Length: 416
Ligand code: ADP
Image 1 (tube, helix red, strand yellow):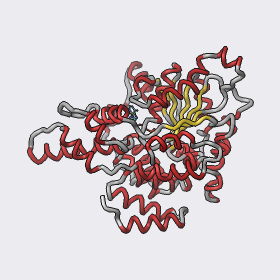
Image 2: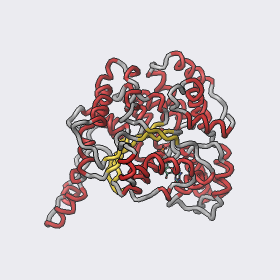
Image 3: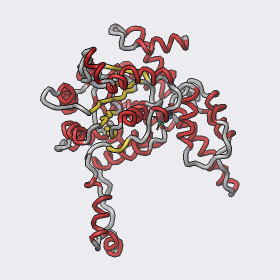
Image 4: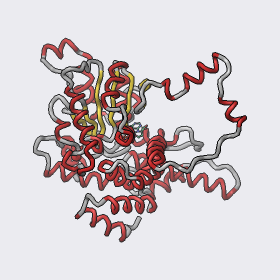
C-alpha cells in the first residue's frame, strides 16, 4: 500500500503533539478506511487510555477490532459506546415474544437463572477453565523455556523455593507485538497450573471507570481469591497502567486505578496465595514504572514475532471452522516471515472475503483456497516493522535497567 499523504501529514502533527486526541481519532478512522485496522486500533486505544469516555474513539476501536477479527473486543467497545450514547429506544417486543421468555416450570426457572449473566460470578472480565497447556502454543521454544524456568519451576518446587529464599510475590508481564500469543500463553500457563483463567481487558476497566460503580479492582482480586487457584490476566496493561504523568488532569480516576492496582499487588493485608497475576502489553514503555518495581510486575518475558511454527499455528487458528480446500499452511507460514499474529489474522480475513466474493459472483459455493491465501499474503502489509522500530529505540536508548535485553538479543539475531 502507498503511504497516504494525508495520514502521513497527520502522523507528523501527532509526533509533535501526541496529546491531540481529535487528530488521533481522525487518523485512526483514516487508517481503518485505508485497510490498516491494527494501526487504527492502536491509535484509538491510545486516546481511550487518556479519555475513556471518548465516544468517537470507542466507535473506531469497535470497528477496528472487528476488522482485525477480534469479535469479542469489538463487541465490548461497541457496548461501551452504546452505554455512553444509547440508541433510540427500540419498539416494545410483541406480547407473544415476551410470553416465550417467561419461565413456567421450576426447571425452566433454574435453567434461565443458570444462563443469566447474574449467575456468572465475575461481573467484570471473563472467568473460566483454561482448557489448554503450553503444548497448544505453536513454536516459541525459547519463550516456553523461559516461562518454565522463571515461572512454572519455582511454583512447582516449593522446597527448593524455600531453600533459595525465593518469594512468589509479584506478577509476570508478557510483552511483544499484537496478536502473537500473549493471551494464549497466559491461558496455557493457567492450564499448566490447574488454575482457572480470569481475563480482564481494557474495556472492562474502562467500563469500571465510566460506571464508577462498586465494581472495581478490589472486586476483581476478590473474585480471583474466591476462585483460587486462579490466574488473573490483565490485557492491554500499557493503557491500564499508563504512566501517571501521561494522564490528563481529568483522568484522575485512571490514576486511581493504577494506585489501587499497586495496593492489590502489594497487599500486605490481603492473602494472594494461589492467585497468579499476569499482564500483557504491546508497548511496555508506556507502563507506569511504579507497576514494574520488585514485588509487582517485576518479571518480564518478551513474546517475539511468531517464528515459522507459531505462524502456521496462528494461521490454523484463524481458519478454524471455515470452509477450506486442502491447504499447505507451512508454505504460507514460510512466505509470511515478519508478520505479526494480527497481520496473519487479517490475511485470513482477506482470503475468506475473496472466497466469499467468488462464491457470490459465480453463484456457486467456493471454499477458501491456497491461492486465495497466497494472494492475501502478498497484499497484507506486515505491521511489525513499525512496532520493531519503536521497540528498537527503547532497546538501544532506554535500556538502562536491562529491561529490554531480550529484545536486543532478538534484534541482534535478526540483525536489524
Ligand atoms: P496477543 O495477546 O499477543 O495480542 P493472542 O494470544 O490473543 O495475542 O493471539 C491471537 C490468536 O492467535 C490467539 O487466539 C491464538 O489462537 C493465535 N495464536 C497466537 N500465537 C499463537 C501460537 N504461538 N500458537 C498457536 N496459536 C497462536
